[in-house]
Length: 184
Image 1 (tube, rainbow, N blue to C red):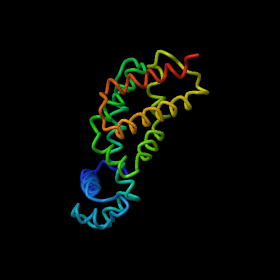
Image 2: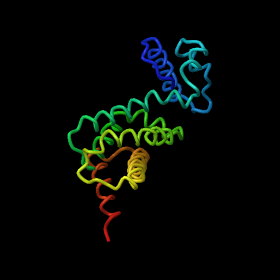
Image 3: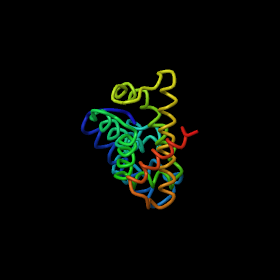
Image 4: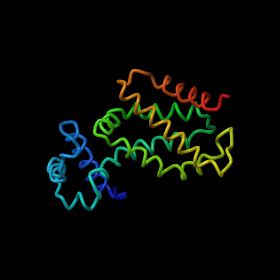
């Protein structure tokens, strides 16, 4: 997704995104063409190519919304503990469950992981001093990827299971698993 603050670009990107989401509810992602997306959005193909590199790139509109909510929540917190961090993550995912189910059902969950992995270093720098426990910088990047992988795998399992657990239960499961991993 090509970034721009121009209102007409943002609107075009949103229309294309909404058209893809609507089509994904009706048919497989692989069978959706750029032409179908732009026709439904009432835009021409050149508008698509000015804004996106691929169909997968369109989904970054929604994924970026999730990322931005998460980053804002962590940046706006005074102090960070893993129970809060995990609760915020799962709560935002609950709010965006329709998109996450679509991604999962179309085999595109990896896009979420790629996007979160892209923001980890930036996110770490912005919230590093808010954690009560400071990990050695040498291991921090591994810890970030470890936690993100855990969050996303719990999220995918939750979706596969019909989303029957609450956000509190998901966050508690992450904390319990973390304790399990350090127990001797």
